[in-house]
Image 1 (cartoon, helix red, strand yellow):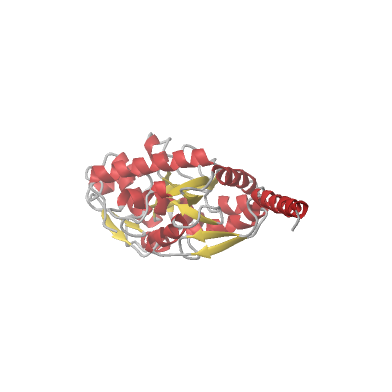
Image 2 (image 1 turned 90 degrees about the vertical axis):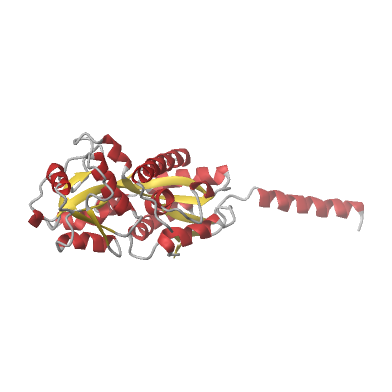
Length: 325
């Protein structure tokens, strides 16, 4: 081969390399891991945003449920994935602030992920059945202090477990971890049903899990953990009740990748979510469930999650709530 031909071939090769190097992310479909079962709060949120988010991304989003171990199985799959932006996680409050704060052993830490956004906030609401005769938080706290109250949750070491205890602690109940009898259920739906059936006195859970029960008059909300009122919940806010610390007690859904996800990919997700949350159909769907839509940047998301984790961890340490698992 002559020098001229070699030079020509080299030029073509260099051109191809440059083209490949400048290729824009994403070039293909992105695998989106939902670390919980179909039909749950995370799954509903993820699939609701998938349409508008996919349009913003410009490539298909392949939604895959990888459930197990309270969200740990799917989370570990993303933690161990190549940090190229093609395997991302729908992170949730339970898997990424409650479990790290409450569980003595967990196969990951917050440092194993790069959070690129939080797009949905679920205020926590505490509720009772109308038949209970309880009409305010003061009345509920009085019943707890009498030693004759119980609460349901979706399991030991879950957001609902921590939420009820945190609320009681903020309202000055001594030994908040044991002052009311904890009766764990198999899931969030069962926890609400336990209140309906009179099995327990109250539940503190995401507003999205209670929205239909409240709308139908089956449950009465006593408070919501926000500074502003929540649509569909005729109840005082934590700010109204002088308990601003409870504003940290919220559910949330966000998106994360492996810890080494590059800056440019992280920034793109921050932009895409801003576009996706403006979709009227998505907004209407989530607001009907009592959710509050936000559009946090990667930096805002990391700060928000870290602050909530530290708040929960301090409460767990204070009350000795750490569990195995």
